[in-house]
Image 1 (cartoon, helix red, strand yellow):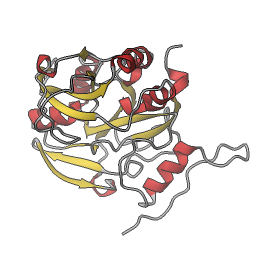
Image 2 (cartoon, one colour):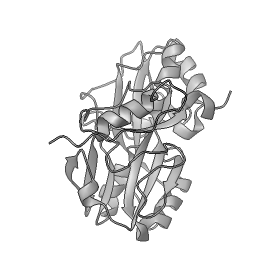
Image 3 (cartoon, one colour):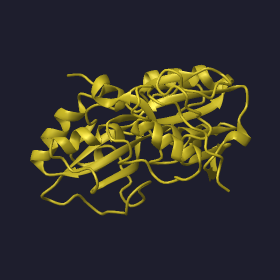
Image 4 (tube, helix red, strand yellow):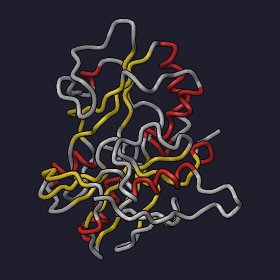
Length: 269
């Protein structure tokens, strides 16, 4: 069943909604439930983690200790559903195309709407996503639509309270020349994971190439390409499984929350 369409705010200057606002409107109306990679290019995308307030402090501290994987852009107060600072007029319960529900460490379902699950004690965290710098990479001549995976690793995160688990990374295969450019470009985006955490052998991080979270299984990196690894905002999903939190809601993999923040304005020159 489609949700009723609720219009998002206009710019107020006669130009109509921005690409980010239009994308959120499609999700809110239930007309789009796919991945957000490539949508509203130029706007910052985020992962979302929503959990009961009793876990909020420990999770915020976990993010602070693991800021490469979990760069927090906004914390939404308990019970609030609007990301007032990054996306005024938004609704975190409907404006992501697909949500993953975790109960006691198990991913039990994916749903396009969490209004029926919402509680007054929910605190939401918006965490910068590497999808954000795809436009900048493309402008610099680095392809972003192929040779990319999301992988579990055996590299531990720095634990806090119940929150612990392995780091999740995004792996991209690039030519050596593209790799140099990618490092230079992504280092300008510290709120979206920044530069790669590793370049070279996947075994150094303990990557599971045979069972990627996103992408087809692979055996090895081709000899003419270089593997680069960025910390990934899917890490909280891995943490949810390891921590066995009784209830935790996140965006489904590659289904980001599109903010009104312009990527080129929150990166370093």
